[in-house]
Image: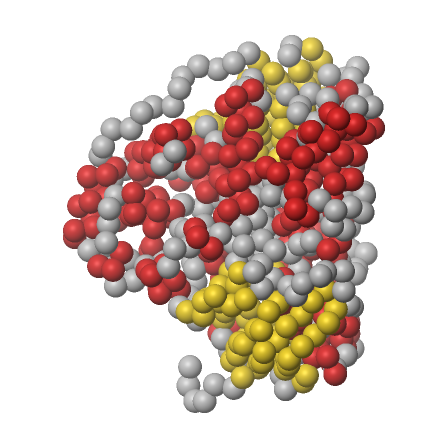
Length: 575
């Protein structure tokens, strides 16, 4: 960066404690972020990342009460002495919970909100709104209600809404959490372009490290237990620090290189697999690793549990079909991922299987019987559904009460309720917070509350819509291992709706791929993620394992299959 860098965000011995908490969430923060920098903020769920962002944009202390010590200056303004209007003129925010950000009655109105606040004339405003919507792929949804969109579509609208804001600082809180892989790449490209072309200061809070590093990042700030642990570069982070120790999932290609015994210090660059030249010694180790034999996954399927036959569904007569003659069979004991682009029909399919939206043509059968005579509650006894947005599920004010609610409504004994609730809370790492108000926890922690509430019901099958969005690696693996234990020990059928290709690769056997309201592929994960045609049609992206395979001259399908089997064998033998 040319010239002297100007500080735009300055934390000086800054401490913050929420009014409802007994201890500070942020402790003695000293941090300076300079104009035009692009900074990635990493850390476990509940570490203080979102609190830090809310201090910068002024929600703390002007909307969220708490005690501040020390100083925080944003664009030269002491935040506690300023007001939200002053700070919002400088800081634009894309929230992780996009529902909390919508103010317009339509997508177009919401994207136009910042321009309206600038008193821009309507003839000038409309082309800018259309341009922003087109960039994020929402140009055909301008008249739609924001709350009727899928989670990924909502996130696109939120991104479009800040593109034309005349602010100096942009905060992105988990911007990739609900986006399909190709749209995630588009979002990262967009953030990069905004940062570089308009000299914006960008702060990104995101767990998906590999996806963010698709484009360069100037600095990485690692925060844990309310303190800054590291302030470094992406290269140093990957080369010299144990990410897993801090609850961060490392990129797949880095994991593969470690499995192969590679020396990461031999590589000139590590932050982006596409830019790696690969040292010859590491190349040989990778080839040797991937040419080893690995045990095949156990063959055979359980009895048929769910059968969907020629099922179609649309939300309103004037809208196109959300599902168009889809066919799918799911057996007992399977672990299946539903993947594909935003708005392709994944969530609609899950809601239809759960009976929330019944097919307008075709059939859904549970164990060979048409489910139409069954109520939603009766279907819910068999198939549990964890929604993508936790705020749409939570109704109680205290964490323990929320997890116990469905059990209480079913009339279980106090002893049975206590036992199930404690087990679910412990496995989701929420037991010590059981008496906390729900409003006092992060979005990622709210997701764990909803998962715990469904797991406490112990249904035959569990559908989880984006279960890992907003979760750090430790909580992610704790929840996933618990869910896998339900599959392994009790034969539970597990269905994931996900944009997280890590999850699909590491934890599922089979991928059902949606595109434009249809199922376009139904096969093993390694077959799907090595098929260029399917990847393009479903707005997926090549995983870093695919790129690594090309670099070492091996077939991507073979490399992905080997990695999947090695991972699963490692979990079974405790590696």
